[in-house]
Image (cartoon, rainbow, N blue to C red; front, side):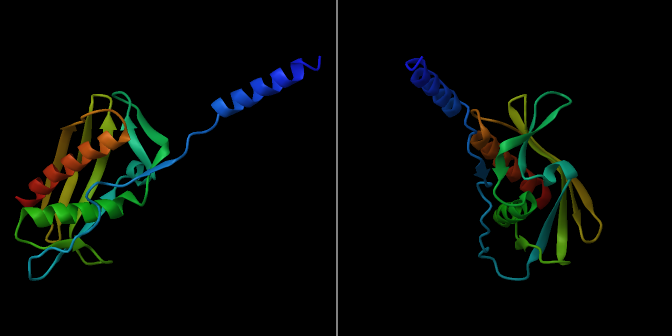
Length: 172
């Protein structure tokens, strides 16, 4: 009986080690560190408003035509709307003659409303919504970008490419 106890204890410890919870990973968008543009002149404030599903700290993935999955251990390092404001400002600054920056409270001249910012089961990422200028003019924005490789880092690279497309649509 004494010889079985160490073997049972070893088995329990081995099973406990295999069943440990993976560490939470935090992600940021590749181009979300705001860079002051070299252009001179006034700035245009940009604000991003997200749908309820996108306001979660979890990365979002569409698993089939009807189901969205919120990542449990793969989270945004900061609120997604903040990162998107900086990333879009950077991308818009690279596109046109206006100078963009994340808006301070109440000063947004451009508000971008997004209802999709996610990976999909089809091997691509989707971004959609619309942009509204302070004068009331609106344009729909949409980007579907192929994902190269598997995993959340590949999904974020694809979403970053989609943001390039969204910036071009807004800058037109």
